[in-house]
Length: 328
Image (cartoon, one colour):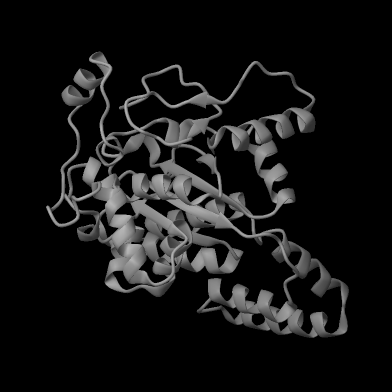
């Protein structure tokens, strides 16, 4: 369903996706130096593809990214050239000469210029192109610097279509930024360098713009306060960080049909956020399910599914039912 959904949503306009991928065999290959290279490549490739990173998290054996794919617009040739040179800051003599030819062909509307333009446009505003370029470019760097060869990533990538709605995006963004907390690396995501929230706190304006879009707020100070409330729960901002919820505590709450706060449950691995296909309000999920069925001509017994009532999820529903445990 993933490919049909991506094509379908590109026709609708703006969309937000949560993407995740792992290293081969889940090996912990990414040290801090590698994470730093991958972090920089995120922003570079996002600028090239014309997509917006809302937040992200890079761990030693996987990464998450919350990506906004804007509605497609016309892109002038000069902007395509700027984006191309962004990916090739140190071109070879051949690349430099080739680009000079392309510039002349674009000015004269020659066939080579037209072919080049079409190839570049095919990579713009495309989720798959962004992920493919990030993974390819990082793999080349990693293999070259570590004297290895072969695949680095174990799978294509997983993606969940997220409703462009503040409450839904906020929950997903917090889940991503809390990855290092769930892994036991830090107790406050601002102390983990390789996530969007930490970059925002450190002053990266582009990272701040991403979270401002998520929260739909004006001014970083107000957005920061509101987002920390989601990360730690109401009244917990001044009390300090909370650690991850233990598996035993979660099982006890589930057995007693009780509830955790949203801030607590986000410290557990919620598989719906990685494997749920579509996440949003019931009407949003139903709309995309109906559009997918119309596009493919398939009948399906799938229906919007409520998330387990272990927390107050608001109106969050998901498309895909899970055969394995919801929390892990």
